[in-house]
Length: 241
Image 1: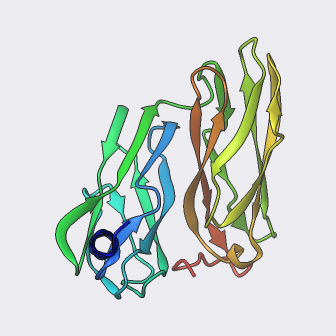
Image 2 (image 1 turned 180 degrees about the vertical axis):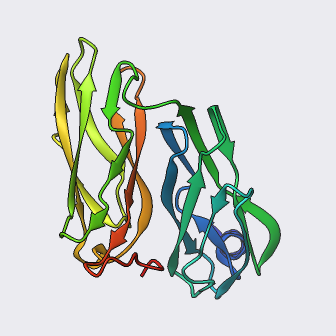
C-alpha cells in the first residue's frame, strides 16, 4: 500500500470518528419499554439511562413527558463524556383501556432535535382474570399503619398446560425487592414476595414491577406496588423522603 493511499485512509477514519464521537452527544442505552398487561388505574414506573457518548460535556435542556399522565424527573442535566444519568418515567393508566403508546422526549444542548422514548402497555380491567397467566392481586399494598410492615405477597397462576420460566424484567431503582421462583409449572401457582428496602420504610411510594413469562406469546404483566406510611403517632407522612 502506497503512503498516499495510507494517508488518505487515516484521514478518512479520523473524519468518520469525529463525525460519530466529536462534540457533545447523548443517547439512551435503551429507548423503549413494554409494560405488557396491567390493571386499569395502575401507576407504572420504569428507569431509562441516558449516556454522554461524545467527547464534550452535554447538557440536557428539556425533558417533556408527552402528556399529563406521564412524569419524567431527571436526576442530573449535565453529563461529562462517558457519564450516565437516570430518567425515571411514571405513567398513570387512569382513564385508558386497551393498548396505549406514549412518547416522552428530551432535547440536548448539542442538537435541537427531539430524542424520543417509547412506552407501551395493554390496559385491562384486572390481572386476576387474565389468561393464560394471572396475578392476584392486581395491586400489591405494603402500607404501614403503626406496626412495622415491610412484606407483602402476591400469587401468579399458570392456567395453561405449558411450563413457564419467570423473570422480573424491571426491578432496578425501586423502593423494594422482589422474590420469585424461576419456574411456573403448568396448571399451578407460585407465590411472589415484596420486601420494602430499609431506606424506604418511612416513605410513601407508588411504583410497579414487570414480570415476563417465556411462553409462545412472551407474556408480560405489570403490577402496582404501593405504600402509604403512617408513623406510630398516627400522622401520615406528608412527603416522600
